[in-house]
Image (cartoon, rainbow, N blue to C red; front, top):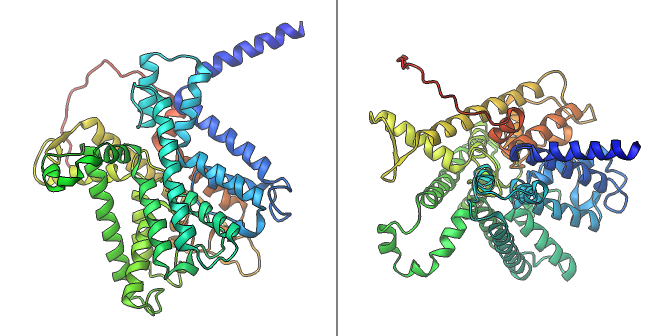
Length: 474
C-alpha cells in the first residue's frame, strides 16, 4: 500500500514538473541552487565562524545573481574552498541562470518539439529553434577563453605587487571571473581602490566587464565577421552587422562616454569630491572605469559614499545602473536595447511618425510595448523597494550605524535590482529586514521583471475579441 502511494505521489510530481513553464522552472531552479549553496557556504570548510546561515544566504544570492553586494569580507571570512565555491556560483549565475535552467529543462521534461524549443528560445531571448546545447557549449567555451586570457594578463602585468605566485594567480583568476560575469566581488575589502593608478588592471577589468555585458549575440556576430574587418569603412557602409549588434555597440559606447564625461563634470565641481585632488589623467581613468563598472559590474577604484560623491554624481550612477548591460549578457538592468528603443520611440513621436524607425529599420509595435512594459515595471519595483526599505528603522543598530537618506536607499536598491553591486556602505549596516529586501530585489532583477510575472501568472492565450479604438489626450 505504501509503495503504491509513493508511486502515485511520484507520478503526480512528474506531471506537475512537466507542466511547469520555462519561467516557473527557471525561478524554482534558481531558488533551489541558492538554497543548496547557502547550506554549503555556511559549513566550516568553506567559511569562518563569522558566516552564519543568514550571511551565507545573502552571499550566495548575491553570487548567483552576479550582483556583488556583500555583508562579509570575502578575503577574510571565506576559506580558499569557500572562495572557490563563490567563484563557481558566480560562473553559474554569470553564464546565464536562465540558460542553464532551460538547458536542464530539456532533460527534465523530455520534450524536444519545435514549439518547445522555440518557447525556450523566446524565454532566453537568445536561442532559436536550432537547439540549446551547441549554443550553450559555445557560450561556455568562449567565456572560458576570455576569462583565461584576462587571468594571464592580470597575472603577468596587473597584480605584479603580489609576490607569492599562487596568491597572484588566484587573485588574477578570481577577479577575471568576477569581472567577465559582471559580479563585482573582490578579494579585498577596498575592491580595486589599491589599483586606482594601475592602467593594466583598470583596462583588463574594464574590457572583461564590457565583453561580458555585450551578450552572446553581439560577440558571436563580431566573431563571425572577424575576417571582414580589413575594410572596416566599406563593411560598415554595407551594414556588416545586424541591427541588434549595431544598436548594442553604439548605445554601450555612448553610455560609457556620457557616464565618463558626466562623472568628470559632477565630481570636478563637488567640494571635497573624491576626484578633486587627482591629476587629469587619473580623473579620466577613474571616471572611465566607474562609468563602465556602474552599468554592469560593481567594482570601484575610489571610495563611493554620500560624503565623497555629489548627489548629482550618485543620481547619474543610478541612471547608468538602471539601464544596465545588453540582452544575453551577464549584467542586469532594463538593457541597452530597451533604452535605445525608448529613445527611438521618443524621437519618432517628436517627428510625428506613427512607427518607430531605428537605423532605417522599423521596430515592431510589440517590441516597443515590451520595452515600455519592462521600463515601467522595473521602475515601479525599484521605487517599491526603496519605499519598503524606508519603513521603520532599517539600520542594524550596531555602533556606528546610522539612518540613511532616500538617495542612499534608492542607490542601494537600484544597485541590487540591476545586479550591479556598487555600495555606499549601506548594505552591511542594514538589519535583516533591509537585507531581505535587497535579496528579493537581486533575485527579481536577475530573472527579469517580465519573466517573474510570467512565472507567477503563467502564459495566457491571446484574446480573439477586437475592441473599438478611441483617442486619448496625451
